[in-house]
Image (cartoon, rainbow, N blue to C red; front, top):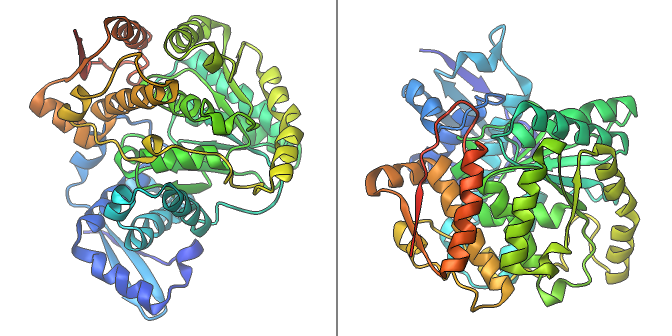
Length: 452
């Protein structure tokens, strides 16, 4: 049996006695078991894995223990994966990420229970909790650089698309822009990797490669090797809110259901009348080979949410430099808007997010079947519902609980307006045909059925 003890790093290096007691009380809870699984996922940093069973099954003897001291807490790993070590020493980035998990799951979990965040209807309280988690993770730097670019896209992308994401990241890095992604492989890794080269050439020493994830997805998408800041939000809704409030520009690469979920979340919020004056550049981009993908996405958005939604973003195909130029050229406009409204440069407080975008959606068979899928509702509410559809599909594809649910009860059943369902069916079928649901080489079995 191999055991290794890790000294604390980052914000967990100094703890109050109350915090130590709270961590100690967490030792036998469900939260602690979640901590164990997330630590194991972090030890797989850099691995391109989209099935949590591939992580958990070979390591049933893995354990993680908290050793409580008066001056703080140590983490003891029992039988950790060998590939997380170099010459029997744990890789430093992995060491840091282990304590990021401790910080976000145990410490913040004790402060903000899952129940309080899900039941409390107060939107301002939820936004405060998102801010507090990011602040505690030292993610909000208060530098006034306004250079955090959120990059979304799928982990199931081909070589050409991946190379393009790196080129966009490189062009962003040359302009001293930092990168925030979902921290996994594919389109989440490429921009970070490209930006490291751009930052190096410009001698930009403050390069940030921020990864935002959540407990249900981290095992399916372990942090890539470039991530130097890791934050685990409680659920997908808090994660998406963190993305948008931290961003000064958003770049969206080709992807599958998860990317569609992110785009619909973003569009639904930006369509809100209270956000009409917001300044946030949004670019959808990919290589020439991805042109058909963006045409299908744009068509779906136009036919479901209208031309107003299409006007929120710009599509750029095959021109990485132009993408970076658009983001950079809008940097001063973002600054001016924040200054005029008195808003923070590092956290967009003035953005209004309706409760339907903040409430956690549990993708059960019953909840999926009861989604209101028709055109007889405001565009913002339709966008929120469509977002929930894709959130359920992501859960059924890659989240361990969702995958187990599909195995036990069969595929989700979706029904609604025939025209809307036809549009959705066509889009989802195009994702399957383009192998955007899983990593290349794996067989995709749909976790949903569309019925009339």
